[in-house]
Length: 270
Image (cartoon, rainbow, N blue to C red; front, side, top):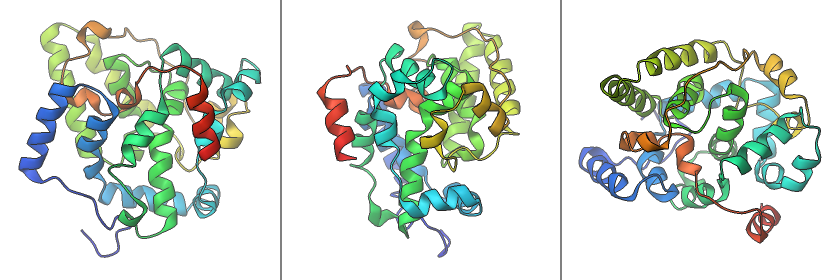
């Protein structure tokens, strides 16, 4: 790795370690701990490229230098519910609740496999955390669901800001092959369209999400250059064990939970 990299310790697994973690993921399924253990070590040159893009953007640079955590804004469900129904924040909280997604579990799992000391500066550490936390926002903006095909489309849509593009492309190729064998011929076309849609999108991770949550969803899409959500035929849960690499992406944060004390206590700690 280049001495200039902002990732001081990528915690690489090595070939045998990777095989062990894939086997572990097969057994355990898409729980936060196994997913982050498997995919965290792919931070490397792509992360550096994302870092440089965000630091070159005035808004992104300011956010990283402020060391902002997204958790307080994303976990304040009461405030997000109180927003107008056409806002990004309201669409986000409804998406989280309807899919029973808990970003807290994944954040907690991630912090057992990454640390501030892994990065050269506070800005890179802030970026690593915001990359993790915007995944479901990207789902809402792109219009892709939490089914297997929706997850692959979301990854393809956001590939320019994926710190593990090789792992992401491997996941997509593996699933496309399985879609073909299972007769889901629409899957490959949907993923190709997601690549196309995402290719012209502005900087996502460097956006001021704390402010954008209050804005109309359609206005945020227009600002970032995101085309209207496409219509696609989801691949439902009965096939969600298609491949261990399905774990990459939003599946990793899909731990059912309620809106009770845990949300509030975590928000107060952020």
